[in-house]
Structures are given as structure tokens and as C-alpha cells.
Image 1 (cartoon, helix red, strand yellow):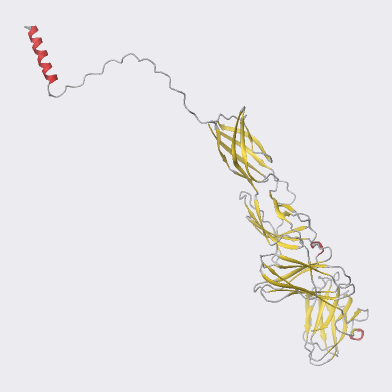
Image 2 (cartoon, rainbow, N blue to C red; image 1 turned 90 degrees about the vertical axis):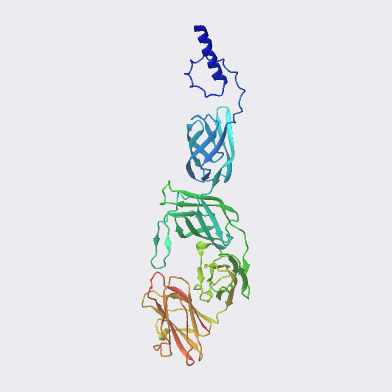
Length: 480
């Protein structure tokens, strides 16, 4: 009976399992079985070769020390690892921040070769090279305006590249001229070249270059120092080979004015002339076709050196006048004339030197301090030599004959610091022809036209800024 019952129950269960009825609930999880056998080892993988993957910063400036970080891939760097940036660069304080990162202090010499270069890391017997990954650049770039030629004036614009070290613009400004002297900036120029700092900001400097006629024609380095004079820690801004002095010959001025064209801003032209061996009147004149031009010229003696400059003569910018001066040379020594426009204007120009022999000359005398002792200008053009005002009350009188409707042109030459006044009086020696002329320096003025022919008196006296240390002069009288 029990067996049968058992068989009957099993039979029902079997029918249920084989039929389409719903499944029963899941039973509890069984015990964990024993561990299986260990699998076979896989094949060897293809890992990358150790290498340098980055240099930061990737640019360094001459005469600077910077902190550099090198990144690696697959490297095992330590603090014993070395770094080589090539010639002109010293590496110090190398430290492994991790097996794939190195930090170091890098000092770049001021004369190191510019441009890209390799970085080499040596770790024991292992060496990694990152080709052309680090570039050396100048901390400032020099851009020339005009030609840096022998016997020239040119302008250089210096632009800062290393913005972490701006220029020191400390200086003082003259209240009269408005010119600023930058006491904490100094430029090293090649032999025969004078550098004058015109303007400066923390990020740019404008430099005026004066080039002697015999300055060596060659490439030269540029360098600027920024900071208090004599401080060894002042930063420098070298630009190797940034200046090239070009060779050129002066063009001789003949009887007719020379002409040319300035094609680029602040370019110049060099001329020379030789006066006669005896006293002569030489008139120099420069003109320009530019509407906003300021034609001018530098006059140098036979040395051709700016240290011996006779003067710089220019017109007022944009007023259409000419640049002119007059000399009284007494020898056949040559002069150099450099045509240059300080506004940077371009266009056609002329430069001329006209030589005239005086019709008469005479020297001042101890008795020429009054009408009665006046020096006689017997013919025009007349040259008065030996002028020397030894006191504020000293005068020199010159007697001259002027035709009806004539205009008298009076000029003085010599010491540019001699401050003179000049007056023209009628025959009585007391009635002025117009107002007395106070030049504030050397004289270049005209009187007339006079109403009638006759004898007139030119009187030279001390100007308002007279200094007894500067009282010498020579004078030229001629009809205009």
C-alpha cells in the first residue's frame, strides 16, 4: 500500500514536470565546489619604448635661468638621471618628481646659439632623445628702421619677448625740451656707433643709432641692460648679430645740388664736400618734397665722428621750410653731410653746398664799441672775424652801405652757445631799422628793405642768455 502510494505520488510529479504547468520556486544555493585547475600563462604583451614626451616650457631666453619640467613615457627616472640641452646651457638641481617626470633649473648663456635643439636624458645605460624640442630665443627682438650704414642715423625698435622681465623705465624728463633720460637703461653698441634711447615703455624701447663714417662694416651684437647702473644682477637683453653696419661711400657735392629719394622711413644719404683753402662762405641747404617732412642734415668734420659733430640742422616739421646753415671754413679739410628726416617721411630731396668768396673781411678791434670806432664793411659780402663779447655791456659796431630798397642779411657762426643780439641803426646810429633782434643764440636774420641808400650800422651785443664763457663769434653781412 505504501509502495503503491509512493509510486502513485512519483507518477503525479513526473506528469507535472513534463507538462506545460508553471515552474516551482528556486531552491537554496548549494555549497561552493572545490577550486578548478590553474589556467595556462598568456603570451607576452607588446609594451611601448621609454621616451621623452614633453618639455615645459619649450622656449628659453638668452641670459635667463628657468625651471623646466620633462615628461616621460615608460621611463624609470631617478634623481641620478641627467639632462643635456646642448652647448651654452647649464643644467642644475635635477629632481625626479616621479619615474616619468624630471624637474631642473636651466641657465642659458647670453651667447648661446639661437634656434631649436635636442634634449637628451641619460638614465644609467639608457638614453632618450627628444629631437628639436627646446628653442632658444633672444629676450628682445631688434627691428631696424633706416639703414645702419657708415655715416648714418637710424632707428631701432626693441620689442620685449621675455614678458616676465619688463624694461625698467626709470628716468627724468627735462621740463623745457620734454626729453626723457632713461637712467636705468643702457645699450651696448658696436665700435663707431652711438646709441641714444629715445622712448621706453615696459615692453618696448626705441633707440637712435649714430654711425660714424669709419665705423667697421660688419655684423655686431646688440645688448641692453635694464636696472640701476652698476648692479650686477640687472637683467640683460642680448640679441646676437642683430646689428649689421653696412659699408658705403660718400657722394661728393658739386656746384649743383645733389638729389635723391628716400624710399624707407628713417633712411639716410651720405655726402661730402671740400671747401677752398682760404676763408670762404659755405651755405648748406637741404629740401624735401614730403608734405609732412622735416628735412635735416648732420654736419660732421673730416673725422666723420659724431663725437665731433658740428651740428644737426632741420626745419620745423611740416612747415615747408628748408634746413640750412652757413660755415666759414678756413682750410680745405673735408666735411660730411648726412641727409636725414626725423619724421620718417619718404620722397625726393636735394642737398647742396654753395661756396662764395667774401668781397671783404676785417677783424673786430678794441675801439669798435661805438659808432666812432665801427669796423668798415667796405664791400659785401663781408666777413667780420675775431668777435668776442667779454661782458654783458660789450658791443661790436660795423659800418655798412646799403642801397635803396636793399635787405641786409646778417648771420653769425662759431660757438653755438654764444648768445647774441643784433640791431641795425640808421646813419645817426640811434634810430633803429625795425626792432633789435634777440636770437637766443647765434644770429640768422634780415633787416629791410631800407627806404633809402646810405650808411647804416650793425651792432652786435650780448643776448639775454649771455655767458662770458661763450662770447666768441664771426659774422657775415650780405645783401639779400
